[in-house]
Length: 402
Image (cartoon, rainbow, N blue to C red):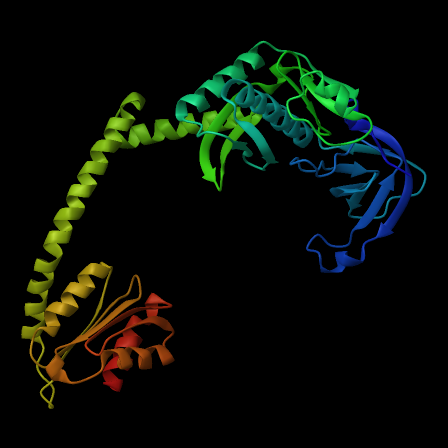
C-alpha cells in the first residue's frame, strides 16, 4: 500500500493522525551509533523523506522519535528509536526544521528562475545543507555583477509577496505552460508555481508566499568541474548570517581602529606592511644565522677526534632560520650541526664534508627510535618529529649514534 503524502497539499500542517501498517526492527541498527531502530510504515504522513536535494523531516510518532525518513518506492519508511504501537497513532513534525527547509527550497526555486530567465544560467543540481544551500549552474561565468543582479531580482520578488501555489498536471500540460525545466515522467505530476516567475515540477515542501522567505543572500560562487556552484542562505538563516557578518565587521573594525567603511584600505595597508616585513626578515635571517653560528662555534670545543659537534634544541625557530644556521655552521671545517625546534619538531643535520659522516643515515637511525619523517643527502638532512617534545631526546640519540 502506497503512503499518502500529506505534505503535498499542505506543507504548513504540523501534526496528523495515521494508521500503522508495519513496525519492524532493523537488523543493521546493531552497528549504528544511533542505537536500536525500527522502520515504521504508515498509511499517510506529513514527514518528508530525503529527496531531490532536500533533507528529511524530524518529528515524533506517538512516543517514538523520528531519526530519519526514507523513500521505498511508493512507501515512506520512518526510522524511529522505539517500537510504535499498532492501530491509530498521532504524529508531528519538528516545525523549526520544516520551516527552515521550506525557506531554503522555495528560495532555490526563485533563485534558479532568476538565473535562468535573466542570465541564461540553468540549474543542474541543488543541495540543501545544514549551514548553506547550493545550486550548480551551467552556462557562462556568473560574475559578481550577475550574482548581485540575481540577488536583487530575487529579493524584489520576495518583497512583492507573490503567491506560491501547488499545481497538478502532466508533463505535456506543464510544457505548454512555460515550465522552467521539463521532466520525463508519466502520469500526474506535482508542480510549484511562484506567480509570474516560475513553474517547476517538485515534490518538496514550500512556502505560501514569497514574503515568507524574508530575503536571500548569495554567499559565494566557485568553479565545480564544468559548472558554477553558488552558495546561498534564505530566511532565518540569512538574518543570522547577516547579523554575524555585522558583528564580525564591527569587531575587526575595532581591532584595526578604523571605521567599517575603511576596512578594505586598512587590510590593504596591513597586507603591504606584512609583505614588506616578510622580505626584510628573509634578507636578515641569513645574516642573523651567520652571527649566531660564529658565537656557537666559538663556544664549542672539538671532540677528541677533532670533530666539532654543535647540538642545539631551539624554541620557536623558523624553519628557514634552522636551515640557514645549519648551513653556516657546516661551513666550518670538520663541524657537524644538529639543530631542532621544540615548537615544531623540525630537525636539521648538516656537516662539513671533512667530518666524513652521513647525515641522512644518522637521521634515519634517530627516526627508528623517535618517530618522525624526513631525509636528505650525506652532508645535509632534515625532517620533523611526530612530537615536538621529543627534540631533546632526538638530539641526544643523534649524538650517541654519531
